[in-house]
Image 1 (tube, rainbow, N blue to C red):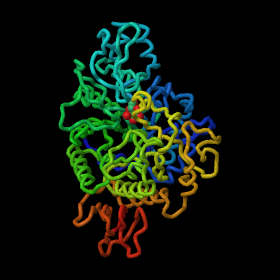
Image 2: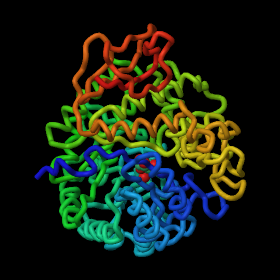
Image 3: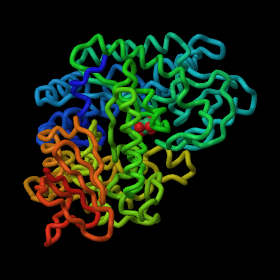
Image 4: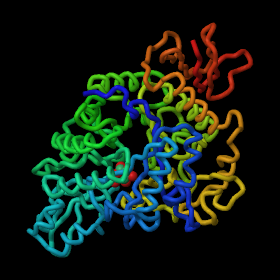
Length: 534
Ligand code: GLC
C-alpha cells in the first residue's frame, strides 16, 4: 500500500561525507563527533535528513566504499558509541539519519575475503565471491569502472572479479549466505535507530550467470545505453528480489525506514522498477544531474522522470552534486553542453567560477521548486566550487592510478569544508591538518562569512528550504506555463531565464525568492531562477 504521507516523499536529504565535514580531534580527517558537533547548522539550514557516506572499518582504498566490517565504525571516525550519539542528537533535532550500505563488494581486508584467500580454490569460502579458473587469461573481457581489467589473479591461479578497485572483490549474490548476512546487517543498523540506507551500486549485485563478454567501459554514474542490450553485470532482473526481501525487513520497523538506490540505469522507466511499491523507496535521478543547462533538455528530463515515477507510485528525486561528480558550481561554469568530466586538474581547461556559481544557484532554486525529494551534497549550500587546481600528488581516488592518470578522479569535490574564514583549516578542525588540501579561496566561502548575509548562498538555501516547506512544494505538481521556462507548483511560479534577454514576471506575481537580484525594472535576468507567489 502507498503511504502518501510518508516523510521521505518530499524530504530534503543532505549528504554528509564524513571524511570532509568536520574534524573534532585535529588529525585532518573528519569524524563522527565532528558531525554531531555541527548538526545544529544543518537544523538551521532546514533539511529533513542526513545521508552519511561510509564510516565503517576500512583500509580506505576507496574512501570507505571498501568495507572491512559492516557492523563497526572505523577508528579514524570514532566508535559505535559515537554513531549512537550522532543518531540520537540528529533525532533530537528532528533530523533523520540514512547510512550507506555497500553490498556489491567488500574490502579485500574483510574477514570473508581473507578466509577465501586462505581456504583456496573450490572452498565454500570462495563461493562468497566470484572466483574463476581460466588459465593465463582473465575469465572475460570485463573492465573495472576505475580502469583496467575487472579480474585479478591470485598466486594459486584463480581469478576474482572486482568491478571497482582490486581491493573491492565483488560478492556472489547467488550464495544464500551472502543474502542472509546482509539481512542481518540491515537489522543491526535498524536496531540502532537509523532511518534508512543508501544502497551503493544497487544495479550491480547480480551478474549474468555465464559472465558473457562485454567490452563497453562503464564510467562512474554513467547511465547505461537505453537503446542497447543490458550489460551482463548491470541491472539484471535478479536484483529486484533482493530489494523486495530487504523491504520486508524495513517494513517490520516503525517510522518509515527507507532504501534509496544508487543505480546508473536508463531510461527512467527502467530505473523506476527499483522503486516499485514493494521495493526501494527512492532512486537517485542521475539523468537530472547530467542534463545540460538548456531548457528543452531539462524539461524533458523533468517530465520523463515524473512520469516514470508516477507510474509506479514513487516520489521523484532530484540531485545536482555528490561525492562522485565535479561540483555543480564548477560543472556549470563550462560552455553549455560540455560533457561531465571525471575530475579536473590544474592543466585542464578551467571553469568560469562566477558564471558557474550564478548558474548553480539558479539550478538549485529550480530543483528545490520541483515536487519530490531533493538531495544536497555538503558544501553546495556554501556555493563551494570543485578544487580544480589540486596538485596531483595529493590525489587519493583509485581512479587516478587505475586509469593510468587519464582521469583526475573525484578528490576535487571531497575537500574538507570551510566553516570559519580565519581559523586553522578554515574551521574544519582544531588544527591546520586537512586530508586533502583546501584552496586559498575557501575563506570567502566559509559559513561564518555567509550567515546572516543577504544574498549569500547559505541564506539562499535556507530561504528556499523554508519556503519550500511553507508552500508544500515537495508535495505539489508541475504545470508548465507558456512563453518561458516556467511551471506552476501549487500557488508558486518557478521561472528560470535561460535566454539572453531579461524576462518579465506575470503581473500580480509577488516575488518570494530569486537566485540573484532582479534588474532595475524588476525583470528576471539571464541565468536566474525566481519563485513568485501567484
Ligand atoms: C559508488 C560510490 C562511489 C564508489 C563506488 C564503489 O558509486 O558512490 O564513491 O567508489 O560506488 O563502491
